[in-house]
Length: 189
Image 1 (cartoon, rainbow, N blue to C red):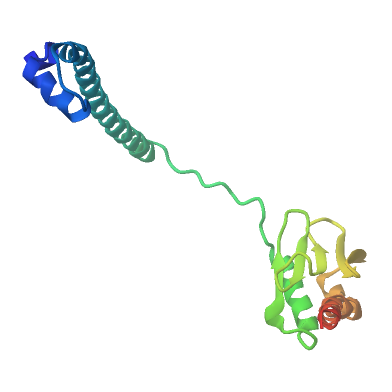
Image 2 (cartoon, rainbow, N blue to C red; image 1 turned 30 degrees about the vertical axis):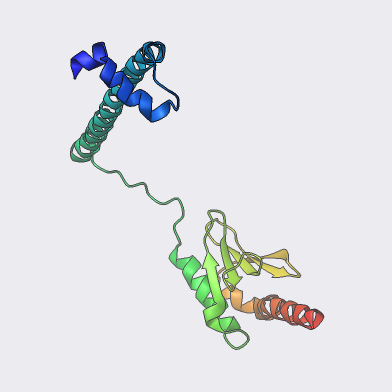
């Protein structure tokens, strides 16, 4: 085989030439195709070798990465970062107060909260587009921000129980979205 690769014989060249050359195969044609077949065989062999090398390198690289990952896992302890946002007990208590205020107006299962860093958001249907109120309880001065017509109005509160003093505004904020929904349904009809 190596002799045919180095210097293809006439029968070898004729065999491949018949596959691609439609006319009669003369000595001149054999001479032309000898060089073409020789180059093609070398290219074919180089491509096969390159494919095998690439495959072997890919497997070796994957194995090396796996070893690195498992080595790091064994040597370096995993450090879990403290979450930046911690929902405090006072925030949860405020949420439950708002939920209890609204329980006769709106199904309590529709009332959710989200806790970004600077305030505590209480929402209807777990959508930021339906904000009922915000609680600002993690500073010295405490506030409740109630949304009326999608605009926030802040009220200072001294204790968490002062939220009960804003019952009417909270109910109005929550029912605003229901009225808006009814209005949109009426327009659609």
